[in-house]
Image 1 (tube, rainbow, N blue to C red):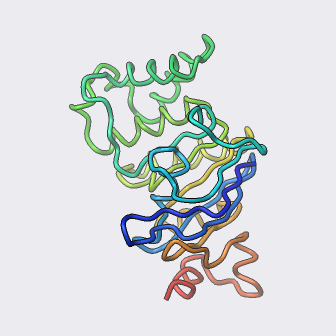
Image 2 (tube, one colour):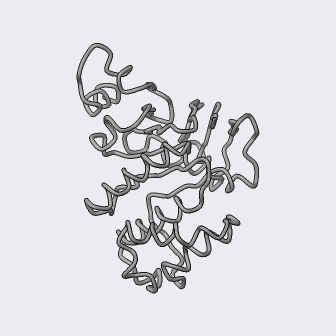
Length: 232
């Protein structure tokens, strides 16, 4: 289980994340939602080691995440930066070799390219890819890496409808395979009925967390309505 306790991140006098606590279990998809500036991306960047937290602990199965956390946690950021001078296929080779994957990775990488319509662009350089294609490539690389924890920050942005549907199918498969998933998104309708638990944050603090059924209580309100009420 991924455990986050007391996460604090400040930028000067501004506190972006203020004592955040949450868990993510293997085979579970946690939806992290909140208004703009709530601290979602900052939280994910701290977990990935891209930002240094001012306070807090991160553990996986009871062991602290250290400098080698890249073997445990992978982040697909909202802004799809890729290596400009690597081709689509070379990105996947880079990830596979960096993760020390066995020989079967080529079949998996080829399947990911097919499912995300990347095959026709196999030999294109990163600098020649559209934003949507870059997003698809980063998602494919994140899935190929095989880390037990996969975090996705606004992964649907830039994906066409087919890509969004394919991503949801893949996330369902990854969850069934026992990977712990964290998805940050404003597309609450996409997550409603799909995620296992929801973490609603605002101003870097937890407003509510639990299953969608727990947040609804005795009502049948959509997740969007619950979110708007809590963050008003």
